[in-house]
Image 1: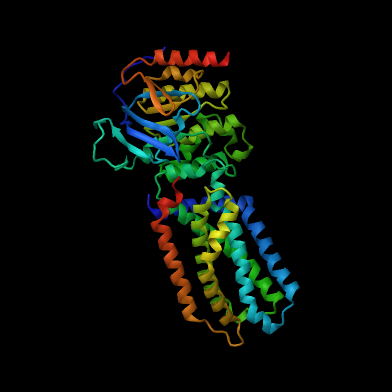
Image 2: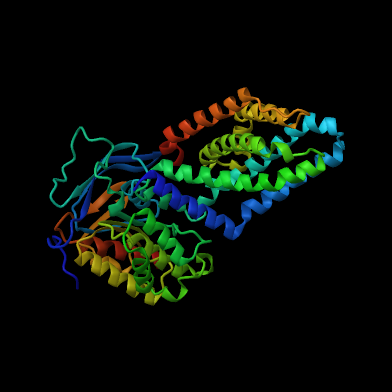
Length: 259
Length: 224
């Protein structure tokens, strides 16, 4: 059983994120309603909720892909206070945190007509990484796709694409990892690799914000659980709190739904 | 990372994708050739008529080919939401737009390199003495077309009925460019070929204005 509570303090600098009264509207539909949430650097947060609860929208706002309609988000590092400043702009990215954020989204974010190796090389170049060829080779090896490095992504199965999508998100060693249903399509071997990867990231104090279904065993790694309902934070175990009661309640609901 | 370096990386990606699939180039070349050949069969122009109306026909063929080619420019980034991956990368929005502009310029230049000699043969226009000057006009006109087209491809990429929306937005905006390019080409196809610097300056001005607009608006062009 993994330990819960305050994340360990050793390891490279991590990136936390604060949502301060964040609201997101699509026309007249309000997807996120006044979400205020402070996620400390190094926390592993399970983001739970039914379909349409607002998990994906919150992750897209955190990834800087989407601006909130109201409110601010602010990135914090280990040494900084996570208190939002009243005069802060909507999104504070003064230190350009893009190269510290990784995301696995619903789509793979991969080019079907490029090979696995070409895809990873492209993003390694865009993130201005060093030693690209060995980094890409190691990444392909780690996700079990080394033998298919030269194959076009469109020839891959769903699970293989997902593994490559995860490898792409981790290529630049992000310090804030946003995962939106990351285990979709993974087989047992893929799930084992993914769980190992998450354990390593947690030990390395990478901040993780993961939206997934209640049956995913990776949720046991979470140091905090936040459940959303109708765009609002319904339950939050808080920093240092025990996420297990919330996880247990969500799993019980999930079993009830399936019966 | 500098914008120039990011642009070079993204341009290489665009070229690799296109030269691997040849989706845009093959369709556009065939379409542009059909337009030129059909006009030739329909009107069977004399040499004098070719010099008079040929430039208009040539640029309309480029315009139609361009609008066909430019639509998927941003559209195909939607297949796996790859534009999101580019937007998340620590590169400037302008590098993403500029990579597309330069790639589209190269693709349309390839189409023109195939189409212009065929046009010369079908319409009995000698290109021998005007290749250099014609290249300048084609380069300036094509650059204006692809800058504007790429900008509107980005704008229309999220819209419903985007296939229809792009030509509807693009063709009226390109009317001044079409007039200038046609007038400059008419001068070159005359018995005594002349390069009209006024129209050339207009084309260059059009390119500069829309290039500057694409730079200033690049953040808005690729945001969700």
